[in-house]
Structure formats: structure tokens, C-alpha cells
Length: 265
Image (cartoon, rainbow, N blue to C red; front, side, top):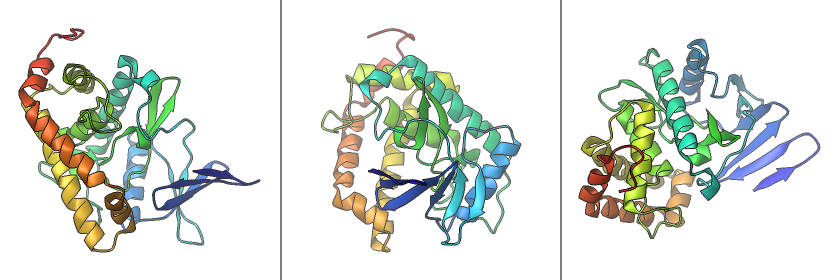
């Protein structure tokens, strides 16, 4: 939901209220905010300007970030399910990972999610249409780095592919395409990133969803309002069904991964 006043625009997403004031965004700060801000400053120093620039905190304790101009979608609209868009998203993710690879994590750093081995890069942790900035049919920026954490490249790529292909069961409201078309789009994304599609990718998608479910439930039990809201909305059942789908269609998806680029088989 979006509300507008004379001097600010209020975005209501999930349990967070985000306010845009001019070219600045004010949003609730997580415990990981100091680490995330250090990461965002590092990215800009490394030449990656497709992420918000941090400007500290306001008097209410909200973090203040630069506003990235463009559109954000909760799921990928049909008109944006193009190969050019996949290429732009994958290329931007590769640029982000390459810039993050030289970030030196310290013992004082706090991450919302645990680091995973091998810690090749800093994973965004939630690359999906709702955390991307779209302009002219392309992905031009990433936002909401709250779940960033050290990990392997494929961990981030797997979740991005899950959302963008999308690798969803037919019962998922955001699902689109046959298993073959989903696999073709996933393979296209991976090749644009520079990673070979195959069993490792597909198995990592399943592991990534299982880790998401475990984290969501643990955080809900500890009192996290966002996780509790996701569970109340029935998200675990969707992820569990997607996991069953990916396991049931594993060989079919792998055969489609191996099809030549541009093939519809």
C-alpha cells in the first residue's frame, strides 16, 4: 500500500513502514544495519552503484538510504518475462557479487542470516522481483539488503532463479510456465551470470528453500513479527509444495537444463 502526503510517500510492505522523503528513504533499522551500511559503502567504493547509499540514521532510529528510481513488483509480471530482463538481472547479480568479494568481514559484524561455506562473496539473501528496481524492462538495482550474509555464489543464484524462472509448483500463485520453460529460463539466467546450470543449482534451490523455512520458523518462535506474519499468511505451505515439486520433477528439469540455448524442448 502507498500513501502520499505533501512531503513524503509511505510504502507499507509486510510489517514494515517505509517512508520516502525527497531522495531519501527512511526505514526501520535491523540489528545488522551497521554491517549492511559498511557493505553498501564498500560496494560503492568498488564501483557498484546499483544499491542504495547509506546516510546513517534519523532521530527516530530509522536507517536513511538513497532512493533508487524505478518500479518494484511483488512478482514478475507476464510482460516482463523476457530473456533480456533475465540477462539484466543475472548480470547485475554478478556485478554485485564481484564487488562484494573484496569486502572483509570482521568479528564485530552482525548478519541476519548465518554465514555459509564457502564464503566466496556476500550474498544478498533475497534477490527477487520485490527487491529489484525495474526500468524500461530491465533490472537496474537491488534494494533491501537486510538478509545479506557471506556465502557461496550459487546460494544467491539459486534463490534468484527460484523467483525469476520461476521454479514454482503449478499450485503456487506466482508460478508460470511448464517445467521445460522454467528450466530454460533458469538456465538462461545462470549462463548470463556465468554459472553452469545443473544438479548443483537445482539441489541448492531445494536446500535454500529448506533453510528459509527453518529460519522463518525459528525467527517466528523468537518473536519476529515479519516471520510470524509470513507463517500466518501460509507461506510455509507454498515453499513445502515447491520443494516437493522440484524433487518430483528433478530429472525432467535437469534434461531441460541440458537442452541447447534457445531450444523449446
